[in-house]
Length: 427
Image (cartoon, helix red, strand yellow):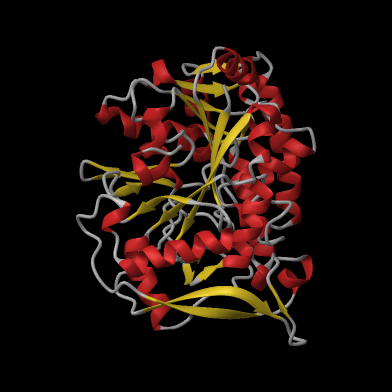
């Protein structure tokens, strides 16, 4: 049985949590393959808004097994808070939540290092969420990180102390003031809590499911344009957010990959620093922000907003091998009489290009737009593609023709019921 992948095609915040929740009933396993608590997957149903940071978005379905893979970095304190928050919804995490022993652990000094690094950059800040993600991945690559399996070792405290001491040396270099007392109190309480979670060799678990022909959905975090290798470096996250990251983040051979669901907004947003060719610093951008409630689900920061960017989308589709497109937040554009689509970039020398090359990300570029007619009406109550306003149907057709991949889903509101699926099935 193939493993299907769901990921974002822009700069994150595309609405992956909602779609995983919608797709989840088709799958028996949902597995998160990268990122950490810097992710915020928002799900809304029964009039209640839920935000998950590390736990896979299939957790609200009692018959689905949820796996946190080795490619994730886990903050035990935030994880425990997430579990506690699920308590009132009768979620049986002891039955359907599993955590890889190879998952890296975020310790308190990782968060302090994150703050120290960001402070030292001054005006060149990348917009880190200050959750300790980058420093944890650094220690992973430096082969000195702590993993979930280490908490079962009688030598865990000494391993922890050794890592903390190396961090203190760096913090002293940056002249960064801190107090570890309360941070460590919460941390070790959370570590004890972790020992009661199903800790597994997840790569064996997942490959066993593949052999048993169990249906599996791999859930990504952040977005393709934040990939540490192919994103807008250095304004990127610290992991591989592309489809290939599911292979290393879960221990899946490439031949087992099936569908690749690519999620994108009907417009664009970005949090933090970095290039954003179609950004709107005007009334239109503010309208997108207000109507779309574009504020970070993890940090609460206002998101930068702009029109959809086709060169960037084509780039992400190419690298991920996307087979199905899912368009989110179409309803946010309801009030616009005209919709702009960036088709090319104009470089300083006057040349027009439609690729996201190394040079494009390094210099100032001017977006070249094509203007389409807006639908300028509410989408409330619409439940099928046939009922969509003609202008919205034309917008979707335009995107499909440009991107060479069909759009199977259009989201017209935050609730799981406000999701229009072509032919009612994602084939």
